[in-house]
Image (cartoon, rainbow, N blue to C red; front, top):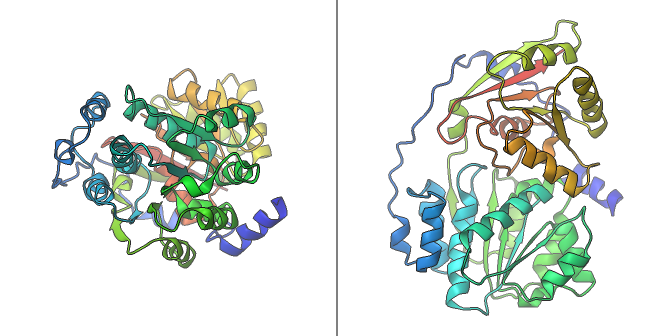
Length: 384
């Protein structure tokens, strides 16, 4: 399976060997300013007729004004339409698909929803959002991801939850063990479709979707559109409505700069940056798992409190590291691109590309971890 997925990465990836943003950055203004969106929604949450408890949960989350994708997607899903959403992270798309499907299940408890996400972290985040929106409503979910034992997941599945959230590999494995009956799912959401294809999940996705009932409601979300993404979507959707949200909005809040090493070791440059006032919550991206471990060791020896997430970490280690960073117990998180998509981390002051990203898309999603929610951020790329 690993060899197959590596082959799929070669066949379906849009990535190039590396992307140097120097040319892109050189003509940008040095100082970003917060951009207040001039978007005026056509709806409010009260217009959708949500159950009173669901509406109260939305208010508890302080969701007051709909984002563009929520304004367009929620009424379509409530009307039973298939939807293609073209939107990057930070646009509110999780709430855009969770809230209408929660309402759908409240209206009809026979409805079951399968949600597929490319990474464990994103699946965990979606499940946490589900718990928040469905609080006190008597709805249950099963989180099915790799890196942890199956026993607890099987136990959750045997309670017949209306919502099953997971990564394609683990979902397929549970299906092969007959712990998931795909024919029972009359709704499906695929989040970050492009990322799933990049990671070699095309075969798993295709197999899972082919086992679902022909009559179902589907919502697929992707940050980019490519022939591969379009092929997957067109093959499994019925007369979908496409909703596209401008993807570069958040980049206007980010000051992007290139830092040239000029022969100096990059670890020295990183050290000097991290001791600079204002570097309060810093996300550092590296290319490889082993490179991140060396970086973590070097920074720890230099007195920095850091945590790291990458593929060699167990799921519990990765989740614990994220929580420490989110809760400001450590100020530096080291990550491979597993963290660049789908994670909502508040108040990241700086993103540092210690290693060059593999593609323009990876660069955009990396730096998009800062400058969120109409705040400014700074993205630095270290270049030899």
